[in-house]
Length: 394
Image (cartoon, rainbow, N blue to C red; front, side, top):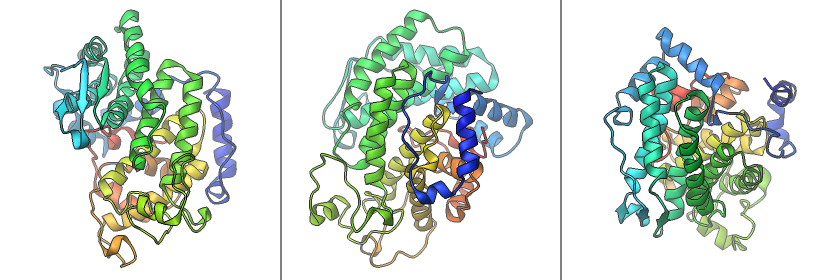
């Protein structure tokens, strides 16, 4: 364990839950040296999962079986790369959008399968998928291009990190070509963020952070993390924000009416409400997933965002959405008395960090998380989080 990580662990023990109440710690820069594999899952976390799977323990064993039984783990899978991936609103038109996302998830699935089984066929399959895309793709176009780039760009570096740093069969030239693809096709598209609904910019920053780790690019990492912190603060409301939610600098939301409209017409603000709660829980789940994923990658890199306002917002967002996802009656002041449920398999990472590591009681989030195990994939950018993060102390 590095001195930086040891210091973070000591800080965790000393500051404890109090930091979640008193406010953010001082923001840190990118680490002096990035930890690899270090996007969403670390080697220590993977070793924990491998031991659990090998012993037949639950819920990891059933989560592993779920992953291995999915089409994403098929060794006969043939990638479908395109030079131009064109995605309109709600992926209409859909020229390569689904193929790209699912191939990225398949590469990540195969990377996990390789590490957990030791079967090199899965590593080779992950490499073949990544090589196929890095040889062909040039751009994303149409109205959903930034979102599509974020979705796929958030997953590619997870797979690449595991393969590059745990398997010796990926050639240096192929790695360099994949790095060029991530920088030129993905990072260039997502780095500037988006003024659309918050889940867009959050997953774009998830992609930018993960890509920056793989590229060992400290400047890109710091820029993405700064934008991520601003967007997280503007996505989840806390009473400490004041009468109105925070806004992203430069968003153009200057009046109460503009902010209320952006928050889907919701004019009563309570802890844990998100900018998209009254749109639907599915899109809210996307935002929560990306907040969790970025915080987890930062944790691996030695920065504990869980004990800053990021963690506070994540905790309340999980709890608030979990309450109504589980069927609690919706009060008339919330979303005109009706919500669209369907949060998705997005709670494991944040719940594990806040509950398992920090010991915070999260009754509704715990009931929802444990009741939904094993959590699978949303077929966009979330996959196998019960397997990788359930009760994972690493």
